[in-house]
Length: 435
Ligand code: UD1
Image 1: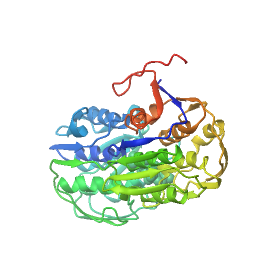
Image 2: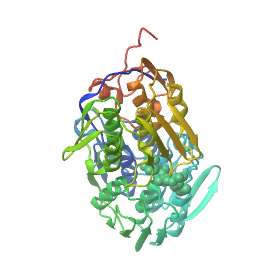
Image 3: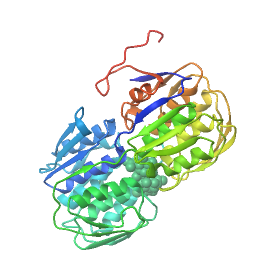
Image 4: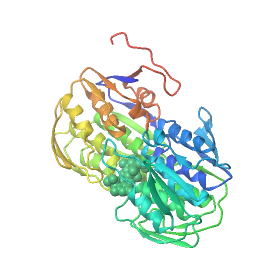
Protein backbone atom coordinates (compact mmCIF):
# COMPACT_ATOMS: atom_id res chain seq x y z
CA UNK A 1 0.00 0.00 0.00
CA UNK A 2 1.36 3.42 -0.92
CA UNK A 3 2.50 5.88 1.71
CA UNK A 4 3.43 9.54 1.60
CA UNK A 5 6.55 10.76 3.33
CA UNK A 6 6.28 14.47 4.08
CA UNK A 7 8.89 16.69 5.69
CA UNK A 8 7.28 19.85 7.04
CA UNK A 9 8.52 23.39 7.18
CA UNK A 10 8.62 24.71 3.62
CA UNK A 11 6.37 27.64 2.66
CA UNK A 12 4.62 26.81 -0.61
CA UNK A 13 5.46 29.32 -3.32
CA UNK A 14 4.50 29.41 -6.99
CA UNK A 15 1.61 28.35 -9.17
CA UNK A 16 -0.43 25.22 -8.56
CA UNK A 17 -2.97 23.95 -11.05
CA UNK A 18 -6.44 22.67 -10.22
CA UNK A 19 -7.82 19.61 -12.05
CA UNK A 20 -11.38 18.90 -13.13
CA UNK A 21 -13.97 18.20 -10.47
CA UNK A 22 -14.30 14.55 -9.48
CA UNK A 23 -17.77 15.16 -8.10
CA UNK A 24 -18.89 16.70 -11.40
CA UNK A 25 -17.19 14.07 -13.52
CA UNK A 26 -18.89 11.16 -11.74
CA UNK A 27 -22.50 12.17 -12.52
CA UNK A 28 -21.49 13.34 -16.00
CA UNK A 29 -20.08 9.88 -16.76
CA UNK A 30 -23.32 8.33 -15.47
CA UNK A 31 -25.30 10.71 -17.69
CA UNK A 32 -23.74 9.03 -20.74
CA UNK A 33 -26.00 6.04 -19.99
CA UNK A 34 -28.94 8.17 -21.12
CA UNK A 35 -27.98 8.06 -24.80
CA UNK A 36 -26.82 5.50 -27.35
CA UNK A 37 -24.56 8.15 -28.89
CA UNK A 38 -21.07 9.18 -27.79
CA UNK A 39 -20.51 11.55 -24.90
CA UNK A 40 -17.15 13.28 -24.76
CA UNK A 41 -16.01 14.75 -21.44
CA UNK A 42 -13.02 17.03 -21.15
CA UNK A 43 -11.04 17.96 -18.04
CA UNK A 44 -11.73 14.62 -16.37
CA UNK A 45 -9.41 14.27 -13.35
CA UNK A 46 -7.01 11.34 -13.22
CA UNK A 47 -8.16 9.95 -9.90
CA UNK A 48 -9.11 6.53 -8.63
CA UNK A 49 -12.88 7.18 -8.37
CA UNK A 50 -13.00 7.96 -12.09
CA UNK A 51 -11.26 4.66 -12.83
CA UNK A 52 -13.84 2.94 -10.60
CA UNK A 53 -16.68 4.54 -12.53
CA UNK A 54 -15.07 3.48 -15.80
CA UNK A 55 -15.02 -0.11 -14.52
CA UNK A 56 -18.66 0.21 -13.51
CA UNK A 57 -19.75 1.42 -16.94
CA UNK A 58 -17.62 -1.17 -18.75
CA UNK A 59 -19.12 -3.97 -16.61
CA UNK A 60 -22.53 -2.86 -17.93
CA UNK A 61 -21.40 -3.13 -21.53
CA UNK A 62 -20.33 0.47 -22.22
CA UNK A 63 -17.18 1.49 -24.06
CA UNK A 64 -15.11 4.00 -22.12
CA UNK A 65 -11.87 5.44 -23.34
CA UNK A 66 -10.01 7.42 -20.69
CA UNK A 67 -7.67 9.66 -22.65
CA UNK A 68 -5.11 10.62 -20.03
CA UNK A 69 -1.77 12.03 -21.02
CA UNK A 70 -3.33 13.77 -23.99
CA UNK A 71 -4.68 17.27 -24.09
CA UNK A 72 -7.68 17.94 -21.85
CA UNK A 73 -7.88 14.52 -20.15
CA UNK A 74 -10.58 13.66 -22.62
CA UNK A 75 -12.91 10.73 -22.05
CA UNK A 76 -15.20 9.24 -24.63
CA UNK A 77 -18.10 7.11 -23.45
CA UNK A 78 -20.40 5.08 -25.64
CA UNK A 79 -23.37 3.40 -24.02
CA UNK A 80 -24.82 2.08 -27.28
CA UNK A 81 -25.13 -1.35 -25.68
CA UNK A 82 -25.99 -1.81 -22.03
CA UNK A 83 -25.97 -5.58 -21.62
CA UNK A 84 -26.25 -5.71 -17.82
CA UNK A 85 -27.88 -2.75 -16.00
CA UNK A 86 -26.25 -3.66 -12.68
CA UNK A 87 -23.94 -1.85 -10.28
CA UNK A 88 -22.38 -4.79 -8.44
CA UNK A 89 -21.49 -4.91 -4.76
CA UNK A 90 -17.74 -5.21 -5.50
CA UNK A 91 -17.78 -1.77 -7.11
CA UNK A 92 -20.43 0.01 -5.00
CA UNK A 93 -18.65 -0.94 -1.77
CA UNK A 94 -15.54 0.93 -2.96
CA UNK A 95 -17.43 3.98 -4.21
CA UNK A 96 -20.83 5.01 -2.95
CA UNK A 97 -21.33 7.46 -5.81
CA UNK A 98 -21.95 4.35 -7.96
CA UNK A 99 -25.60 4.83 -6.96
CA UNK A 100 -25.63 7.68 -9.53
CA UNK A 101 -26.31 5.09 -12.24
CA UNK A 102 -29.67 4.20 -10.70
CA UNK A 103 -31.69 7.04 -12.25
CA UNK A 104 -30.10 6.95 -15.73
CA UNK A 105 -30.42 3.15 -15.97
CA UNK A 106 -34.15 3.06 -15.14
CA UNK A 107 -34.79 6.01 -17.43
CA UNK A 108 -33.01 4.49 -20.44
CA UNK A 109 -33.29 0.72 -19.87
CA UNK A 110 -36.44 0.44 -17.76
CA UNK A 111 -34.53 -1.50 -15.12
CA UNK A 112 -31.62 -0.93 -12.73
CA UNK A 113 -30.00 -3.11 -10.10
CA UNK A 114 -27.71 -1.33 -7.69
CA UNK A 115 -26.09 -2.87 -4.65
CA UNK A 116 -27.17 -1.21 -1.42
CA UNK A 117 -24.23 0.89 -0.28
CA UNK A 118 -24.21 0.14 3.46
CA UNK A 119 -22.38 2.37 5.95
CA UNK A 120 -19.25 4.35 5.27
CA UNK A 121 -16.42 6.00 7.16
CA UNK A 122 -18.20 9.34 7.55
CA UNK A 123 -21.69 8.20 8.49
CA UNK A 124 -24.71 6.09 7.51
CA UNK A 125 -25.21 7.77 4.12
CA UNK A 126 -28.44 6.10 2.97
CA UNK A 127 -29.86 6.52 -0.55
CA UNK A 128 -33.50 6.43 0.50
CA UNK A 129 -34.13 9.84 -1.06
CA UNK A 130 -33.00 8.55 -4.45
CA UNK A 131 -35.36 5.57 -4.31
CA UNK A 132 -38.24 7.61 -2.89
CA UNK A 133 -37.91 10.09 -5.77
CA UNK A 134 -37.78 7.30 -8.34
CA UNK A 135 -40.96 5.84 -6.87
CA UNK A 136 -42.62 9.22 -7.32
CA UNK A 137 -41.50 9.10 -10.95
CA UNK A 138 -43.38 5.81 -11.25
CA UNK A 139 -40.64 3.23 -10.71
CA UNK A 140 -41.32 0.07 -8.74
CA UNK A 141 -38.60 -0.46 -6.19
CA UNK A 142 -37.70 -3.88 -4.78
CA UNK A 143 -34.95 -5.09 -2.44
CA UNK A 144 -33.36 -8.51 -2.78
CA UNK A 145 -30.02 -10.10 -1.94
CA UNK A 146 -28.55 -6.75 -0.89
CA UNK A 147 -29.58 -5.08 -4.15
CA UNK A 148 -32.08 -2.35 -4.98
CA UNK A 149 -34.02 -3.09 -8.13
CA UNK A 150 -35.92 -0.31 -9.87
CA UNK A 151 -38.26 -0.96 -12.80
CA UNK A 152 -40.44 1.25 -14.96
CA UNK A 153 -41.77 0.98 -18.51
CA UNK A 154 -41.36 4.73 -18.84
CA UNK A 155 -40.91 7.12 -15.96
CA UNK A 156 -43.60 9.79 -15.53
CA UNK A 157 -43.00 13.39 -14.51
CA UNK A 158 -43.80 14.20 -10.87
CA UNK A 159 -43.60 16.83 -8.15
CA UNK A 160 -40.74 15.87 -5.86
CA UNK A 161 -39.86 17.69 -2.65
CA UNK A 162 -36.61 16.44 -1.12
CA UNK A 163 -36.95 15.87 2.65
CA UNK A 164 -33.29 16.78 2.96
CA UNK A 165 -30.86 18.43 0.57
CA UNK A 166 -28.83 15.76 -1.21
CA UNK A 167 -26.25 16.40 -3.92
CA UNK A 168 -26.08 13.03 -5.65
CA UNK A 169 -29.81 12.51 -4.96
CA UNK A 170 -30.60 15.71 -6.90
CA UNK A 171 -28.30 14.62 -9.74
CA UNK A 172 -29.68 11.08 -9.85
CA UNK A 173 -33.30 12.17 -10.06
CA UNK A 174 -32.49 14.94 -12.52
CA UNK A 175 -30.95 12.31 -14.81
CA UNK A 176 -34.06 10.18 -14.43
CA UNK A 177 -36.49 13.05 -15.03
CA UNK A 178 -34.96 14.19 -18.32
CA UNK A 179 -36.30 11.08 -20.10
CA UNK A 180 -39.57 10.87 -18.13
CA UNK A 181 -42.88 11.52 -19.84
CA UNK A 182 -44.14 15.02 -18.97
CA UNK A 183 -42.95 17.62 -16.54
CA UNK A 184 -41.06 17.16 -13.27
CA UNK A 185 -40.66 19.80 -10.60
CA UNK A 186 -38.04 19.14 -7.93
CA UNK A 187 -37.93 21.27 -4.80
CA UNK A 188 -35.36 21.64 -2.03
CA UNK A 189 -32.68 20.62 -4.53
CA UNK A 190 -28.95 20.85 -3.91
CA UNK A 191 -27.47 24.02 -5.44
CA UNK A 192 -23.89 22.76 -5.68
CA UNK A 193 -21.92 23.68 -8.83
CA UNK A 194 -21.69 19.94 -9.56
CA UNK A 195 -25.48 19.85 -10.07
CA UNK A 196 -25.22 22.80 -12.47
CA UNK A 197 -22.40 21.03 -14.29
CA UNK A 198 -24.35 17.83 -14.94
CA UNK A 199 -27.40 19.90 -15.92
CA UNK A 200 -25.25 21.70 -18.51
CA UNK A 201 -24.17 18.37 -19.99
CA UNK A 202 -27.76 17.08 -20.04
CA UNK A 203 -28.89 20.29 -21.76
CA UNK A 204 -26.17 19.81 -24.38
CA UNK A 205 -27.58 16.29 -24.87
CA UNK A 206 -31.02 17.74 -25.63
CA UNK A 207 -32.64 17.80 -22.19
CA UNK A 208 -34.97 20.63 -21.18
CA UNK A 209 -34.00 21.85 -17.72
CA UNK A 210 -34.67 25.13 -15.91
CA UNK A 211 -33.42 26.26 -12.53
CA UNK A 212 -30.34 24.06 -12.02
CA UNK A 213 -28.23 25.78 -9.37
CA UNK A 214 -31.34 26.97 -7.54
CA UNK A 215 -33.44 25.01 -5.08
CA UNK A 216 -36.24 24.41 -7.61
CA UNK A 217 -35.48 22.56 -10.84
CA UNK A 218 -38.05 22.08 -13.59
CA UNK A 219 -37.62 19.45 -16.27
CA UNK A 220 -39.66 18.84 -19.42
CA UNK A 221 -39.08 15.21 -20.31
CA UNK A 222 -37.95 14.35 -23.84
CA UNK A 223 -38.18 11.05 -25.78
CA UNK A 224 -34.50 10.73 -26.54
CA UNK A 225 -31.15 12.35 -25.83
CA UNK A 226 -28.19 12.60 -28.17
CA UNK A 227 -24.41 12.66 -27.79
CA UNK A 228 -22.58 15.79 -26.67
CA UNK A 229 -19.22 17.21 -25.70
CA UNK A 230 -18.79 18.88 -22.33
CA UNK A 231 -15.97 20.37 -20.29
CA UNK A 232 -16.01 19.53 -16.56
CA UNK A 233 -15.77 22.40 -14.03
CA UNK A 234 -12.59 22.86 -12.01
CA UNK A 235 -12.56 21.04 -8.67
CA UNK A 236 -13.55 23.56 -6.01
CA UNK A 237 -12.51 21.28 -3.15
CA UNK A 238 -9.05 20.71 -4.58
CA UNK A 239 -8.79 24.50 -5.09
CA UNK A 240 -9.87 25.09 -1.48
CA UNK A 241 -7.35 22.54 -0.23
CA UNK A 242 -4.54 24.36 -2.06
CA UNK A 243 -5.70 27.71 -0.64
CA UNK A 244 -5.40 26.27 2.86
CA UNK A 245 -1.99 24.78 1.93
CA UNK A 246 -0.74 28.23 0.95
CA UNK A 247 -2.12 29.76 4.13
CA UNK A 248 -0.97 27.13 6.63
CA UNK A 249 2.61 27.03 5.30
CA UNK A 250 2.92 30.82 5.29
CA UNK A 251 3.41 30.66 1.55
CA UNK A 252 2.50 32.70 -1.52
CA UNK A 253 0.50 30.55 -3.90
CA UNK A 254 -1.33 31.19 -7.12
CA UNK A 255 -4.12 28.64 -7.42
CA UNK A 256 -4.68 28.39 -11.16
CA UNK A 257 -7.43 26.94 -13.37
CA UNK A 258 -10.01 27.28 -10.62
CA UNK A 259 -13.38 29.02 -10.55
CA UNK A 260 -13.04 31.75 -7.87
CA UNK A 261 -16.84 32.05 -7.57
CA UNK A 262 -16.99 28.44 -6.33
CA UNK A 263 -14.56 29.00 -3.45
CA UNK A 264 -16.10 32.13 -1.99
CA UNK A 265 -16.97 30.56 1.38
CA UNK A 266 -13.44 29.20 1.83
CA UNK A 267 -11.85 32.50 0.78
CA UNK A 268 -14.07 34.40 3.22
CA UNK A 269 -13.08 32.13 6.09
CA UNK A 270 -9.37 32.42 5.28
CA UNK A 271 -9.68 36.22 5.32
CA UNK A 272 -11.33 36.00 8.73
CA UNK A 273 -8.26 34.02 9.85
CA UNK A 274 -6.01 36.88 8.75
CA UNK A 275 -4.88 35.34 5.47
CA UNK A 276 -4.49 37.59 2.44
CA UNK A 277 -6.52 36.05 -0.37
CA UNK A 278 -7.53 37.73 -3.59
CA UNK A 279 -9.00 36.89 -6.98
CA UNK A 280 -6.06 37.51 -9.28
CA UNK A 281 -7.70 36.63 -12.61
CA UNK A 282 -10.77 34.94 -14.03
CA UNK A 283 -9.49 31.50 -13.03
CA UNK A 284 -6.80 32.50 -10.54
CA UNK A 285 -6.74 33.04 -6.78
CA UNK A 286 -3.69 34.24 -4.87
CA UNK A 287 -3.19 33.32 -1.24
CA UNK A 288 -0.53 34.76 1.06
CA UNK A 289 -0.04 33.45 4.57
CA UNK A 290 2.52 35.97 5.71
CA UNK A 291 0.78 37.11 8.90
CA UNK A 292 -0.21 35.30 12.10
CA UNK A 293 -3.28 33.08 11.77
CA UNK A 294 -6.30 33.98 13.93
CA UNK A 295 -8.92 31.51 15.17
CA UNK A 296 -12.35 31.51 13.49
CA UNK A 297 -15.40 29.25 13.73
CA UNK A 298 -16.87 27.24 10.88
CA UNK A 299 -20.17 25.50 10.48
CA UNK A 300 -20.61 23.26 7.45
CA UNK A 301 -23.61 23.86 5.23
CA UNK A 302 -24.93 23.05 1.80
CA UNK A 303 -23.64 25.22 -1.04
CA UNK A 304 -23.11 28.17 -1.04
CA UNK A 305 -22.25 27.68 2.66
CA UNK A 306 -18.93 26.39 3.96
CA UNK A 307 -18.48 22.90 2.41
CA UNK A 308 -18.28 19.76 4.54
CA UNK A 309 -15.61 18.55 2.10
CA UNK A 310 -13.38 21.43 3.36
CA UNK A 311 -14.01 20.88 7.08
CA UNK A 312 -11.07 18.56 7.79
CA UNK A 313 -8.62 20.80 5.93
CA UNK A 314 -9.83 23.83 7.89
CA UNK A 315 -9.27 21.96 11.12
CA UNK A 316 -5.59 21.48 10.27
CA UNK A 317 -5.35 25.25 9.73
CA UNK A 318 -7.16 25.99 13.00
CA UNK A 319 -4.46 24.10 14.94
CA UNK A 320 -2.04 26.77 13.72
CA UNK A 321 -4.26 29.77 14.53
CA UNK A 322 -4.03 31.76 17.74
CA UNK A 323 -7.15 31.24 19.87
CA UNK A 324 -10.07 28.83 20.01
CA UNK A 325 -11.97 27.77 16.89
CA UNK A 326 -15.13 25.70 16.88
CA UNK A 327 -15.85 23.45 13.92
CA UNK A 328 -19.46 22.29 13.59
CA UNK A 329 -20.26 19.49 11.14
CA UNK A 330 -23.90 19.66 10.07
CA UNK A 331 -23.94 17.41 6.99
CA UNK A 332 -22.47 14.08 8.13
CA UNK A 333 -22.72 12.64 11.62
CA UNK A 334 -19.29 11.04 11.87
CA UNK A 335 -16.87 13.21 9.99
CA UNK A 336 -14.15 13.75 12.57
CA UNK A 337 -11.91 10.78 11.73
CA UNK A 338 -8.96 13.14 11.24
CA UNK A 339 -9.17 14.52 14.79
CA UNK A 340 -7.39 11.68 16.57
CA UNK A 341 -4.61 11.70 14.01
CA UNK A 342 -4.17 15.49 14.32
CA UNK A 343 -4.08 15.08 18.11
CA UNK A 344 -1.32 12.48 17.71
CA UNK A 345 0.65 15.17 15.88
CA UNK A 346 0.24 17.58 18.79
CA UNK A 347 -3.10 19.34 18.12
CA UNK A 348 -5.39 20.26 21.02
CA UNK A 349 -8.88 19.27 19.83
CA UNK A 350 -11.94 18.13 21.81
CA UNK A 351 -14.99 16.65 20.10
CA UNK A 352 -18.46 16.92 21.57
CA UNK A 353 -21.15 15.52 19.27
CA UNK A 354 -21.09 17.45 16.04
CA UNK A 355 -18.71 20.14 17.30
CA UNK A 356 -14.95 20.07 17.61
CA UNK A 357 -13.12 22.70 19.63
CA UNK A 358 -9.62 23.45 18.44
CA UNK A 359 -7.25 25.35 20.75
CA UNK A 360 -4.30 26.89 18.96
CA UNK A 361 -1.67 27.50 18.22
CA UNK A 362 0.08 24.21 18.99
CA UNK A 363 3.28 23.15 17.28
CA UNK A 364 2.78 19.95 15.29
CA UNK A 365 5.34 17.18 15.39
CA UNK A 366 5.73 14.66 12.58
CA UNK A 367 4.19 11.24 13.14
CA UNK A 368 3.05 8.10 11.38
CA UNK A 369 -0.66 8.64 10.69
CA UNK A 370 -3.49 6.81 8.95
CA UNK A 371 -5.60 8.31 6.15
CA UNK A 372 -9.17 7.27 6.92
CA UNK A 373 -11.15 8.96 4.14
CA UNK A 374 -10.53 11.33 1.27
CA UNK A 375 -10.81 14.72 2.96
CA UNK A 376 -9.41 13.52 6.29
CA UNK A 377 -6.33 12.51 4.31
CA UNK A 378 -6.04 15.98 2.81
CA UNK A 379 -6.12 17.42 6.32
CA UNK A 380 -3.24 15.18 7.38
CA UNK A 381 -1.19 16.23 4.33
CA UNK A 382 -1.71 19.87 5.36
CA UNK A 383 -0.73 19.17 8.96
CA UNK A 384 2.38 17.27 7.84
CA UNK A 385 3.42 20.23 5.66
CA UNK A 386 3.93 22.31 8.83
CA UNK A 387 4.95 19.55 11.26
CA UNK A 388 8.44 19.40 12.67
CA UNK A 389 10.15 16.41 11.04
CA UNK A 390 9.12 13.65 8.66
CA UNK A 391 5.56 12.30 8.75
CA UNK A 392 4.47 9.07 7.15
CA UNK A 393 0.91 8.92 5.87
CA UNK A 394 -0.46 5.43 5.40
CA UNK A 395 -3.36 4.35 3.15
CA UNK A 396 -2.93 7.19 0.66
CA UNK A 397 -5.22 5.35 -1.74
CA UNK A 398 -7.87 7.40 0.04
CA UNK A 399 -6.20 10.58 -1.27
CA UNK A 400 -5.79 9.06 -4.73
CA UNK A 401 -9.58 8.65 -4.89
CA UNK A 402 -10.01 12.39 -5.37
CA UNK A 403 -6.74 14.32 -5.74
CA UNK A 404 -4.84 14.07 -9.02
CA UNK A 405 -1.06 13.60 -8.50
CA UNK A 406 -1.23 15.67 -5.32
CA UNK A 407 2.37 14.89 -4.38
CA UNK A 408 3.66 16.14 -7.74
CA UNK A 409 1.56 19.28 -7.58
CA UNK A 410 2.72 20.10 -4.04
CA UNK A 411 6.34 19.29 -4.85
CA UNK A 412 6.09 21.74 -7.75
CA UNK A 413 5.51 24.57 -5.27
CA UNK A 414 8.22 23.58 -2.83
CA UNK A 415 6.76 20.87 -0.56
CA UNK A 416 8.92 17.94 0.49
CA UNK A 417 6.59 15.06 -0.25
CA UNK A 418 7.30 11.67 -1.75
CA UNK A 419 5.22 8.62 -2.57
CA UNK A 420 6.53 5.29 -1.36
CA UNK A 421 5.28 1.92 -2.34
CA UNK A 422 3.36 0.50 -5.23
CA UNK A 423 2.76 2.06 -8.58
CA UNK A 424 -0.27 4.25 -9.02
CA UNK A 425 -1.07 6.71 -11.77
CA UNK A 426 1.88 5.33 -13.72
CA UNK A 427 4.44 6.78 -11.33
CA UNK A 428 6.67 5.20 -8.71
CA UNK A 429 8.75 7.04 -6.19
CA UNK A 430 11.96 5.39 -5.06
CA UNK A 431 11.78 3.91 -1.58
CA UNK A 432 13.37 6.26 0.91
CA UNK A 433 16.57 4.98 2.42
CA UNK A 434 15.60 6.24 5.86
CA UNK A 435 12.54 4.02 6.01
C1 UD1 B 1 -21.88 14.50 -2.14
C2 UD1 B 1 -20.41 14.53 -2.46
C3 UD1 B 1 -19.60 14.52 -1.18
C4 UD1 B 1 -20.05 15.65 -0.25
C5 UD1 B 1 -21.55 15.61 -0.05
C6 UD1 B 1 -22.07 16.82 0.72
C7 UD1 B 1 -20.31 13.36 -4.59
C8 UD1 B 1 -19.89 12.14 -5.33
N1 UD1 B 1 -20.09 13.36 -3.26
O1 UD1 B 1 -22.13 13.27 -1.46
O2 UD1 B 1 -18.22 14.70 -1.53
O3 UD1 B 1 -19.43 15.49 1.00
O4 UD1 B 1 -22.22 15.60 -1.31
O5 UD1 B 1 -21.70 17.98 0.10
O6 UD1 B 1 -20.78 14.31 -5.16
N2 UD1 B 1 -28.95 11.59 2.79
C9 UD1 B 1 -30.01 10.83 3.19
N3 UD1 B 1 -30.66 10.09 2.23
C10 UD1 B 1 -30.29 10.07 0.93
C11 UD1 B 1 -29.20 10.87 0.54
C12 UD1 B 1 -28.55 11.62 1.49
O7 UD1 B 1 -30.38 10.81 4.35
O8 UD1 B 1 -30.91 9.36 0.13
C13 UD1 B 1 -28.22 12.42 3.80
C14 UD1 B 1 -26.76 11.98 3.99
O9 UD1 B 1 -26.64 10.90 4.89
C15 UD1 B 1 -26.12 13.26 4.49
C16 UD1 B 1 -26.91 14.36 3.75
O10 UD1 B 1 -28.13 13.74 3.31
O11 UD1 B 1 -26.32 13.40 5.87
C17 UD1 B 1 -26.22 14.94 2.57
O12 UD1 B 1 -25.72 13.90 1.75
P1 UD1 B 1 -25.59 14.04 0.18
O13 UD1 B 1 -25.67 15.46 -0.24
O14 UD1 B 1 -26.51 13.07 -0.46
O15 UD1 B 1 -24.11 13.52 -0.05
P2 UD1 B 1 -23.62 12.75 -1.32
O16 UD1 B 1 -24.41 13.20 -2.48
O17 UD1 B 1 -23.52 11.29 -1.01
